[in-house]
Length: 486
Image 1 (cartoon, rainbow, N blue to C red):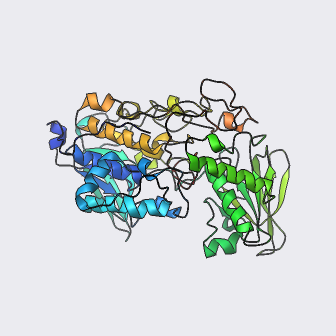
Image 2 (tube, rainbow, N blue to C red):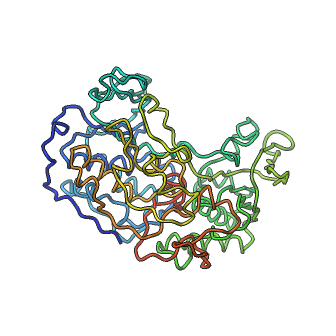
Image 3 (cartoon, rainbow, N blue to C red):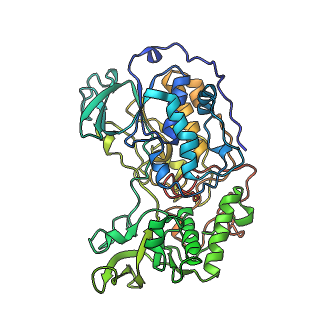
């Protein structure tokens, strides 16, 4: 469980020039972390303005709404958000239940956005952020200038707002990694004969469109995280309903190793059950396993239209033939282009803040510890700009929901000049963390447990005293809030 020192409901922010500034704090994204940021800012006496390009709160979460999270409600509600919702008569869901993405959005995220009222603007896509009247090059008077946030509205209009600080919680869901093993799209991935049959989301075995698309078909699932496991389970479920449904699990690693997770020893029981169900699907013959395969190209073979098939071509010349569909679930990456006129300090490997990157680098952590962190680790040369949530992790594979809530609590404290609170850790997490990723994740079976010993139990992490809470899409969890799990 977690231990959080909560700010009293009637707490007021320290009286500072910053908190008295008329300009709001611009929060980009009305997802779990963006809305939590707004709640913390409001509690600190700052006025948030949440800019959301979708038409409802939690737009990305809704896109994987069919997937059940492997975290309970108790780990998915931010403390400041709970305090903001209390006067509205909001009924908190049963803490020990595991919601779907749709339930998370409808029963928590949308009520939270409604409680923030007109502080949330929908259909407002942020296209750029800069210091007012200063591009990236200009030094003179830079820190004295507020921020200008450029917005494109649903109807095509453009506008701008002035902000005293910017919190970017826009996530990475809209930027799935391509299928190519070198980080670029595989040859042919975006060709007209191939692209319509490549998906980057977890199939829904209960949705008529997905039943028609994947039922009775041979589908390759590329990836080794919890999203991939979720997809395999969905296709195995579909195979029991529609004869001829087959899945091909394509892994870069040389063996399955600990990809099934911790099983019965997992501190998140629902996450452990997911791995066990995926193992059962392989054992039952619903899933064909291909290991050590690094995708170089995808070819359409045969006649155009429904009679053609797809072939995946590996760097070593191996071919996976006879595919009808391909589901790529290989993680996500951030898009920092809207901040191109600001001076962000980003790690060259992960595209995460340089102060945070060493804590989450998967080249170092096959199963290390990601400590709670806040404004200090998330700061940049450009003052009063913070990238938080999934996007703060850049290309690192595992993001923790409560870690994101701690991030924005600390950032809100920093913005009102409460340095002591901003630097204080107010969240206790178990000593597990980044499990797998780009580095050791590609090796045949070299994942280690906390402390460096080989994890012979089959899970990515040694059993922890308390539960990890992960945020991502579905009932998965190693990529972020995209197809992963929370």
